[in-house]
Length: 425
Image (cartoon, rainbow, N blue to C red):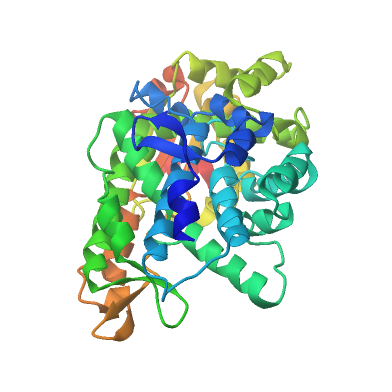
């Protein structure tokens, strides 16, 4: 295990975050495939570059970073063989899942989140299992692509026996509290945005990660500080980058345009699968449908203005009424535009006024700590990050915002919040 992980990955890919990322010839051929190279056309942070001009890094670079950290994690376990011993096929399955985990990702980061579309993990699994890529995985890596897909898409069944147990473990390693995905995107996003908030002590985190006697993935006692740092970093990155007001408005504009196009049958869901940023913008520009012009407006940074915002307590009524589905939010925009047309004596179309409700954010603390020879849950380990504190983090970040086309926003800015609320209820 250790010999293969340390000596076989000799083909370097230079990365600004991690230095040299080593590939084997077989993994290098996998990265040459069109399905992987497609990720070079999808920005990791979507419209965040409108606020942070350096944030133009791609899903391809991120995927290589996740692969690199996954290999480093296995190297750490290889030095502690009493915790985990994997054969070469098992190593390859896990590393292939790390490398390919974002193949089905939509363009513009999370602008399509919550829309009535397949989950990107399911699309990724389909690409791995039923495309040209499946043959490459079998031929070059010598493994079953269905097992790689099962690590990524948790809705897929797993085989019985040892293989199924390994798939379950790999899922927890790749999608846990201190997983390679999160460690790469926090560090990478902070680097390219020019902010310090996402930086993680990766060496310490890997050293502290354990396969606990129960079979769970956890940390030893020194790892609680690493978890605390990650939780606070995630909070700061959401506050300053991911949910920055301008980024949220741009994201909401794209989401509204796509939701309206789907609802009116101007775009079929299947047409959105497999697009990169530029292909999506071309499709939007070539579709004869007025709301899709919002996509071009975002690209030109002709953004809507914020009319008002509510915190979770102030906007409780609207959040409770409209947070369950994008269909409800679109219907509320249609209703508000009709009322505004009557109130202002001018035509207001549904795409001109948007309500943005961020999805509930999760600060994962579901991890056990090995402390004094016992496994205890993280929140009971003496950390300040109790369930209540983590919940307050999430509540403080979640702002309901109403934004509108600039001239409309100017008219609405003089209205009281309670009157604006009434427009949507």
